Length: 495
Image 1 (cartoon, rainbow, N blue to C red):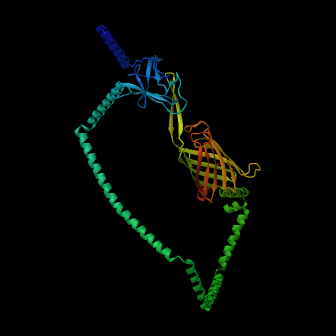
Image 2 (cartoon, helix red, strand yellow):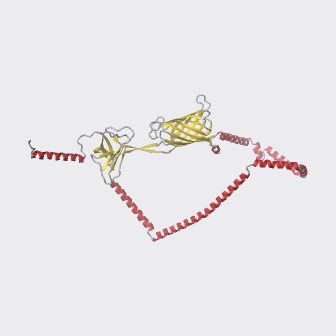
Image 3 (tube, rainbow, N blue to C red):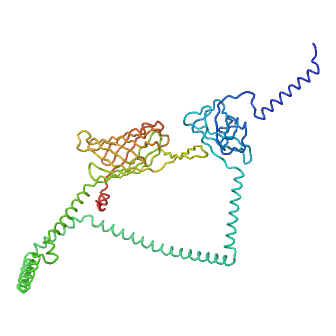
């Protein structure tokens, strides 16, 4: 067998070393042997300090692609990113430049998102977050340190002198004296308060004894009447004699004062004559037709006002419903003001578990940036309702219009079984302000009063939005408040 020559061995070794060096060069430099699979997306940043070509792109700390190119476009950095095949990005994706440590290497962190349609080849990631530059951070820290130094110098100027120290010491001593006086006053008043509470306890005990001893006032009253009747029968002759003596004394007094009575009658005749002639305040009141009409009008208006107050009804409703889709409870408080049976007003406060989204848009360097704020607030309802009572077609139907949970809304109610059963449909949020809403919020349900003031509720909530659509069950209490009715009736009306 022919042996391998030395020249062939040296050449083979040199080729192997050259291959290893080439492989290490491509590997360390991040260069690829072949075109990678995946898709391209673009990201715009105001600053990409620390990022270079072939910088890793990570999702949840795992490599998911790399930066292929960085160019300057309209004063901003345009980053070309290749995402590995099989790694989806959605329309709510966001990107931020991060570092492995305080002074470590930079990399591009991407949050893939979970809502909306997937990104395609050539799409742009618009939701980006800029990080503060280390130099800017150091300048800010230096500025803060300078401000703190200025404050220290100012404090030194204020409290550094002997006069300032003496004034501060005197203020502290005065404050200590005030605190001691307040402590003494509190201890003294605490004793008084305890004494007052003891007196209240004694008064409560006395009232309890009085109530206990007077539980049967009717029996005591009947016993007293029985005793009085018995004494009247027993002392009948003496009582009649006393009444006869009293009658004689009254007759004698009338005889003695007859001239005075005659003078009084004459004065009354004179007064009545003046009244008939219209003299004096009483005469004007009786004979003046305008004054009579004014008084009559005032009395008539007062009667109408009292009738309106009696007709005015006020209802208070507390209701809680469990939304099965969002797995949370929705609480409502309603105040219903009903001046007439066919017209009423609804004022309400709602604690809604479905959050609301407020969107703000800004333009930076010609690019649109959209920011969404998602929060949960207390919501308000204010509606006007008209009920058709005598109409043959829409009998016992009520239509509502106004503010429903902070947005414009409409609704309708149909009453059955003498108002024990109410079927309702409501629609609001036509501007899609609720979180995840793509259509208006439509709710269909019913309330059934199992007792006079207690009802149960159920139905389907948010029919046209799949993310929060689902049945709900609940109940509440509703009662009429007479005190609020009369309180409202005492308020003057402006016509």
